[in-house]
Length: 220
Image (cartoon, rainbow, N blue to C red; front, side):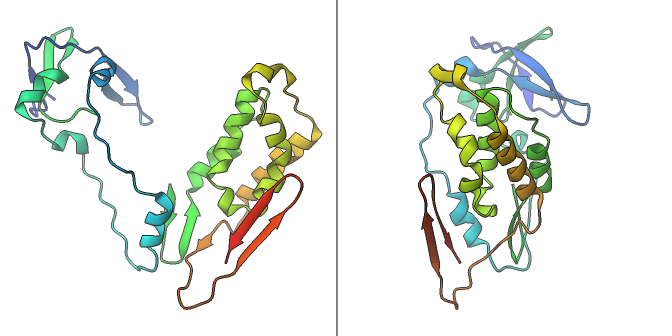
């Protein structure tokens, strides 16, 4: 980084610790712990884009472009008056940054989950605690729009994951929970998990349903 002028020697009054995080390929990512700096930083406030609206905006196109800049953060320079704030300590001395320190598959037909994300859910073992059960429900939650009657299938799981932390001793994993767990995995692993874009030239139908334990609707 020093060779590529991403960092420079510093005499700043700031000093953050560093660590190395091993990446999938076996190499290491250089990480600076800016926790204390973040505490005193005034955050920018801006609305994040709604992912569902963003997906609708890209429907119907034949070609999509994906750009990935090499070390993207390192291509964004820091203002000279702010560089000293990024200082970090190493065995070789104090340095500061000159540059910033560090889904879904979409096609013309519609949207589908990424296979690697689905595989992670399929590899989740049977929960043995409330936290593990909640983690599974959270993982499934994003993909519920791809699973028909998802809430109905998940009802036995929701019955136990709705427990408060004070009642964790009441957590029980019985046959209904295991069957729901297995059924959700089968559903998310089965084809087709695909949502077509709506045709603006065709009428839309809203179908709703409700029972004693869940409600649902679908627009098609």
